[in-house]
Amino acid sequence: MNLKENKHYANEYGVELNEYLKHKFNYEELVGWYTMQVLKYLVRAGKKEGESYDKDRNKALDYAKELANLSNENELTEYTTDDIMGFIQELADDFERWEGIK
Image (tube, rainbow, N blue to C red; front, side):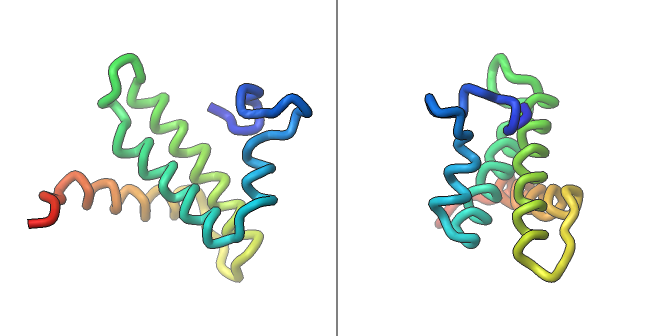
């Protein structure tokens, strides 16, 4: 998946959903949204019938790239896609071990 090439995420004027989100939401909200998208696809990878592990992993990578770009535009620190994937993979691993609220 490439967020810039998927025209099914565009409106009738050709505006991509990603562009709209960046216009409507503040930095913190966008960081949360992209983080949750990466986490969702990492957790789902290899589990959803009809979707390959690689396809979901690539979707997670696309969102991680967007998050890295967003972070680098707004922070003093440079984040790589690998940095972000590593951090969010730790969250996914933690989720897989989590037994819920007891």
